[in-house]
Length: 336
Figure: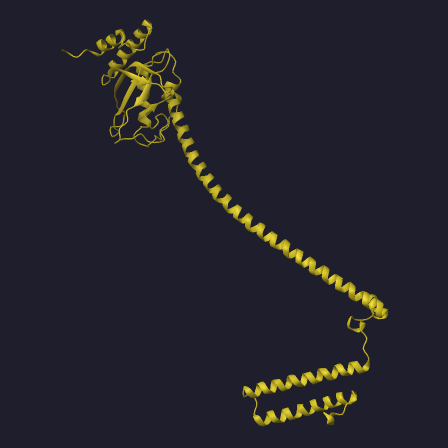
């Protein structure tokens, strides 16, 4: 038995009754579908009609006509693109559903402006579908031009531009504009994600610096409090000393307040006490000299005879200071 022609196949499918009836109920609609399909098959003879069940995104299943085949783009090196065009149950008021058949060897690139990774195709021609004048033949013409500029199996968007509006149709210009805007959006999105990542890193660094700064400020506040407490203690000690001077002898503190004397002169001492302080300082100085001579001898910086001579001289002077101190205190040095 000979295979039926595309026209016979479509007519039989449209006239079939349950359980093989298609989801097209209006006779005028069926006539439009037949005419459009035949025109498309005549223009693109590589396509073949078929019938099958189609599930919409909401889960509804319908019996629809479809046509599958390959479209060839202008470039000879680009592979042909397998398409399946499903005729919507409300065609031609609703646009047909176009899918690019998936092939693991030639996956659809991620950032195609009109074809997603599942194969669903949504060019501006379909998004702005209006019957009339839209039809299947013009749809395929539009897809061939669109895929010539931006093939779904390779990420090489065309960089060509048209210089005058009269060189291209309005729909082709719209396709190119949408494609360029899409790629600009993808590039902007990528740069935005990169900028967000950099800002996130900067935010973490600023948070770290904030923690360090907060810790430093807290430590400085504690140090400030300690210094303030120490200053208050010094002020209290100063007040205590000033009060003592006011109670015991007002003259030195009054002279100091008026700026007539230095602070050392505010505390009076008698001649006896001043002499005792001088002798004590001289005695201590001689002790330091003896210690220095001992160290010089250990380091062999002086000769032994010079050392003995120097020690004898300063020791004699120290003895005289000691004797004078003992005499002034009313004690006899010989009795010691």
